[in-house]
Length: 396
Ligand code: 3PG
Ligand code: MG
Image (tube, rainbow, N blue to C red; front, side, top):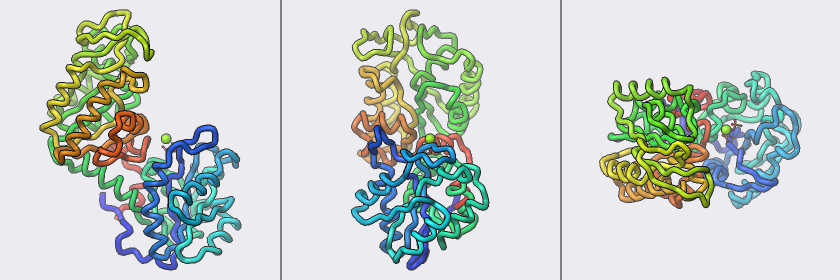
């Protein structure tokens, strides 16, 4: 899809409403990861340097239309100021007199953060009057929140129709990376999909088999595929009600010429515990009292071998229960192999989704992928082939 970027847009002296994703992870009131703020900062710097009056808006957590003090964006605005190394103003509301006064007080190059858009129930309803109130604050709208673009909310979608609307630099980078991975990839292209449930990734698998040459399925969802083919998976996590669906996905893959790799061997144990005794078995010989907790080394070696002939790889979901070593072994080994092929210039690697990012960080290769998306749900929906409303609103 062609979308409008900031290239050639005159922003000097203009009020720019910048939809950011300031929904950073927080634990006991402290921000635990600044990645989203760091990835957003080039757009803010560019706009401010060009003389725009930058008005940043975002949701934060899920206050459901109420003013929840713990969900104020005030501390996030302060953190953004630190990341940018400059003064960032903050105001108590995202529409109405307080917001209007704060915007009116801005000089060219200033940055203001508005309070949580979800303090108003109208935000998630994509209420037109509320979107119009936001639009009143600015001359231009820039959306840099790819990770929120699966939501058709007032600040991500509604307002984009009321002002000249553009993709920010982070949005642009996300879209370019994802398009290079799935829309027009260099082939052969592979997808690695892991995670617990087939049921949550059904649309994803259905779309991928049509698009990729090789599909690697790991995680507990692989157990469902193995069981669907009549193999005993012992006490493994699996979804019995998804067997027919799993067989259907394999048939679709075959019809589309997509090669599916399922585990041939597995690491099994009696329970998911760090100190538990583990055994490596063929998937045809999983003991009844054991559960599959990671993909086995022979399978990983097989995948690594095929990596050499691939040009593009997109990754969503860990191969095993990586939070509990030693069940991180397959994920870590594949992550390192993907990183090495990427570094050698042989592979374009794109990863995304919450768990995937922590798994790659755990493997120490987060910085070595070609691109890692800041998005969770939006990355998944994009991989499912869905139209993201916040992106569609930026169509050129
Ligand atoms: C995210 O963190 O995935 C985005 O900020 C979207 O948040 P939401 O799932 O609450 O809409
Ligand atoms: Mg989410």
